[in-house]
Image (cartoon, rainbow, N blue to C red; front, side):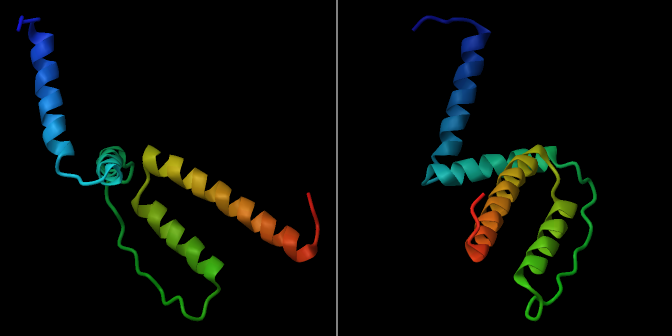
Length: 109
């Protein structure tokens, strides 16, 4: 095998360490979750995470509880990874809410 210089050595070192890391995960979802979690922690804009006291959810409407939990989550987790995922979730939530209102009122947009 011919030596292609320092670039090939760096590539071999990275690929072998990547292979070792990837072998620890039985499914690609686990690897992706691990990578996204690491990126999120490195890119998190919140440097000092506040303590969050969760209130009892038994007597409150589900929508209020969900909004409170999301606000608490954002107070502790604010990164580009969270932004991308939560925009997707928020759009889905609005779409589902619009569908439910439309079905209830028998009104089509």
